[in-house]
Length: 219
Image 1 (cartoon, rainbow, N blue to C red):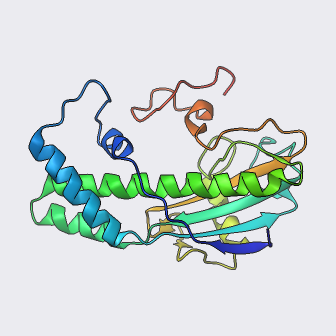
Image 2 (spheres, rainbow, N blue to C red; image 1 turned 180 degrees about the vertical axis):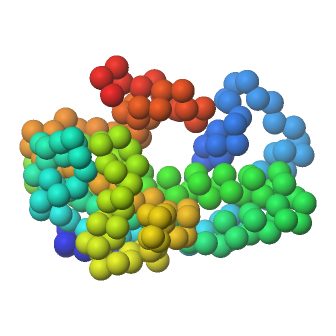
Image 3 (cartoon, one colour; image 1 turned 30 degrees about the vertical axis):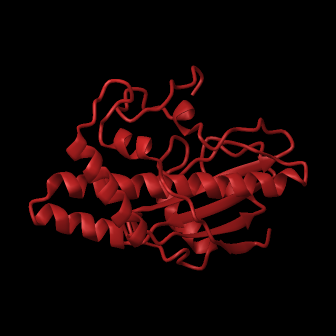
């Protein structure tokens, strides 16, 4: 994998994840027929507005990122940035302003689910690529997680030359467009392989209403 590379991703979010982000819980929420029709309409609109961009950059000095030894056993660190663009967010805001609150909230949830699905797919590609070199991939983490200060967001974008995947970071370390994710995947022979979906396991926000699985006892 070259030092900096762009990627084409074609993932789509699942209905279950869109509903989860709206606060629905599988098995405890009954969807009405109008809600099912609205979900189908939002998914159709979302697919038309979805514009996924992704980029990775390899860092051979992982100790330059994070704090508290978060990447201490890594030989390399692959930085990733994914975005779905601004169109979904802008349309969701228009729906809300026009009084279509449910449609706007659902489209916004669709966008959030889509960018997370894209991050998972990009993470998977990183893991498979470096597996052939005998390198295990640790868990995917992002600035703002424990032991990775949000202020390092700028350092990540500096590696890409300031912008990547159509995304830039402002003076408050917020990515624009907002439906974007930056992350790092540590690689090494002394790492325990971790699934791309294990973010909740290691997050310290134990009471988060969006938690998908229990926190690790040592996290």
